Image (cartoon, rainbow, N blue to C red; front, side, top):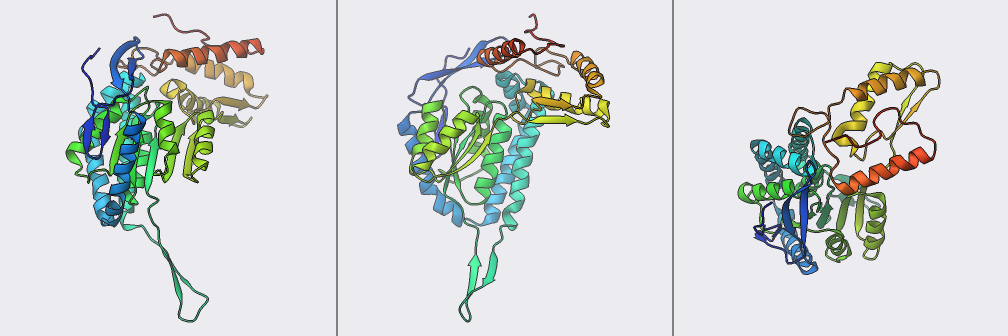
Length: 357
């Protein structure tokens, strides 16, 4: 474990160490502590929001191509340093290498895609009611966007929030998940070193629920983009309502896959196994329920159990399909759900307990 204090917040173009309580970051493969990460305080949060508010008018006035080129630079940086970012995702999320590479590629792709909107930010011209009157509808930035990111895809979701906000002329304050902050910190260091953004355009704070609440509650926040649990999303919406702050919520669910009686069962099984077990099932769009027509349910179940039995579970640094769950808390939550399913009459046909070792 590293005991050296780490700068975990980036505010107005400067790195600093938060004065809040340190939060341990664990390697889920062996539950060892990687680092103790100092968290931000509410005063740090306000400083970050003030910096973003100061920078926003100037960033909005910059040429759209300037903003697009900044995203292209960020994408280039992600591509150039992909190996290091993959290493951090594997270490802190427990994500197998191949899946971590996929996430880094997604992060790069989100930046490249939204950069191309720099020449596509269009409005409309409408006829008015009065003689000689025309109405111009223009797209305008919202202001200061708060991006609260999840632990399961820390880089991909970050860039999916950051890129569209920046190209439109918004400034951003990011709160990485306190569970998996390392890859986000590394990306911010790369942005600081290579992207040449004006001070205050992007800011990073660290911490848990209290930091998130301070971001949502502030009158300086124009919009909150939140990805996470349903119940937390409800709280974000309720707290944002006091200032009529806009919200964009991506929350968890119980997404079903439906297999009809005329389905190609091998194709269905392959698709659902991938959709269900990628990132050890820790995906908000995971196929968490499978509804199968009674005529094919036995054949489907046999094929599915066989396919699951071929999944390779182990250290995510190796050639495996599934690594560990992200934390002991997540394991407990999953085990409790399994126990409840048994109590309610479910039959376990594959797995059912943590693997030995």
